[in-house]
Length: 164
Image (cartoon, rainbow, N blue to C red; front, top):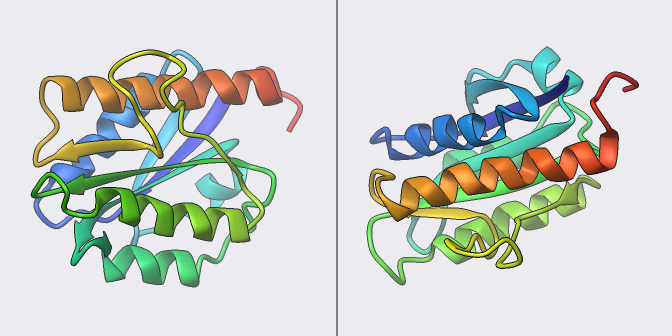
């Protein structure tokens, strides 16, 4: 079975809920371990085929906590499938720039970055899943869809995970 690590920073619980939904969406394909950015399970990340990162949006970008996590990430994630998700308080509040900040960090670490985009229909996950506040309704669907897309792409890339 494929393995997924979901690393997140959450102040209000909204991004943590997104992380839970992303993991739930991937359940058909991957066994997931969720962890806060400051309680990193390095062994679980090292074993993972998929590593997803999620953070709230602050001042039009990613939270400083997630930026620090990504800047100092202690595990070699090169060649793993990566994805990002972000929560925001307002429409137009910078969730897309928060996601792109995380994407740049994943690319720099030689991860294979995937979002699912708009190819799988609605709700779209452009750069990754986004939720306005607590993920409910279409925002929750977006997180589930994003997790499923990551799992399906990892299965395509890595098979069932038994050979890694």
